[in-house]
Every structure is written in C-alpha cells, then in structure tokens.
Image (cartoon, rainbow, N blue to C red; front, side):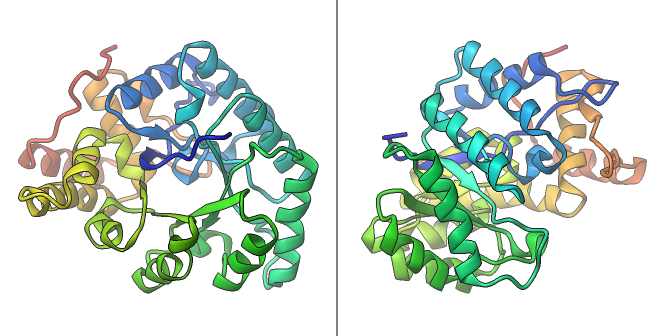
Length: 306
C-alpha cells in the first residue's frame, strides 16, 4: 500500500443474484466500467451494502476482481467493523494484495465510546497488521454509526501513526466538519475526501484530495471531469451538471435507486436486487427517478448490456 490514492472514488455497488448471493461477473463488469471512466474503487463502502456482506464474501469478491485484472492500486476496500479480528483479517488481505488504502469504519455497535477506546481499536488493527505499506483512511459517518471520528481522535492517531493513518472520508454531510478536517490536518499530508461531489468546488481549493461519493457509480465521467476542471472556466458548469444528477438520486433511497438505474441502462433486471433489510425501489420512486434522468439527458455510455 505504498501509493497514495487521490481523485474520485466510487463506493462500488454490489450486485446480488436472485438467491441474494454476490454476483461476481456483474461485480467485475461494473468495476471495469468504472475503471474505464478513470475513477477509483472504494469497494465495500456503505453504498456497497458492505454491512450486509460477510468477511468471506468480501475477500471472495476482492480476489475475483484482482484475478480479472482490476488494478490493486485503484482499490480502497472498506475493512472496518465491529470485530477487531474481522478488521485485521480484511485489512491484512488488502495490504497483502497491494490495495492503495483501507477505508476503516469505527466499531459501531457500542455507542458513547471514548476517543481512547477508538484509538485502542485502530491501534490494535494497525499493530497486528504490522506493515509499513498499510495506509488507513478513517471513515466518519456518524449518522449511521453514532460513533464519530473526532478531530481529537485524528490528532491522537496521527501523532502515533503519521505514515499509516493518512486520510479520512467525511460522510457527515456537515461542511464545517469537512472544512475543519482540511484546515487542521491537510497541510501535514492528511488526505480528506468529502462524501459528495457537490462539495468538490469548495473543498479542493482548501486542500481536499477528491471525493468518495455514491453517485460516482452513476456519473463517473462527469464527476472525474469536475475533479480535473473545477478551477477552469468550465468549472461552474461542471459542478452544476454533477449536482443535477446527485440531487436526483439523493431525493430517494439511494442504493435501491442506483441499482434500479443500472438495471435500466444495462437491460439486466437482476441488478435491481438489494439484500434485506433494504427493499427494491418502489414504482412511484422509479418513475420519478427515470423521468428526472431523462430530463437531465443522463446516460451510462459504454455500460455492458445484458
């Protein structure tokens, strides 16, 4: 994990077959399409339904995309979770296979835990993985975990592991928090990724290094163009265009909506499948999303057809 990953990353959707098993071939095809659009892959993030996947399933899918030629240097697998042993196993697997980083949720079952307790969790994983190639990206999504990654925790971990704890994804949706992460740590080489492309034009000038956003699954080329061109004369237009697509998806349950749209543009109805407790997008929301996307002239060029 020696190379630092920057730019635009997708928390890659995980396809399931009719029996609710991860569908390897569809997963490979989706990853290839995203890579072809010049974005990175944050496999097993929130929008990957990662919390609904077992450790064995994550390792199986990772091995499959690597065997299919997906570059390990473009991967930031999600490896955090409630169990230290699971996190160690997943993180070791990522390091051993050359992934560019590991995106690590805090342990999220117990609430109200201290920064000292979270420090002990991350420290234990880092020490047991025991590799100077490990690059950890802290995953702050308190609306789901109820366990925040505080500025104090970042400072504690950076003091002990400055070459290992090298960045964070801020999914809080609170701009002041994202800005505080950048203002406090970016100057010392800490890479901050907002969780929405809608913040790119605000965050990049301050020192953010990209974004890890759900809708990169839908609009990889448009968001990559924004990342590259935010400070050009076309920057405002690129930001506005990306925001239109983002707003369509975030108006409804995003994971089912994105899968429904992949099903539509691939001609493959199996893509609509989500794992319980999630439910497929209902008819009314499907109609509203597809109508809005048609109005926006949305397309998924080059996506493999069934």
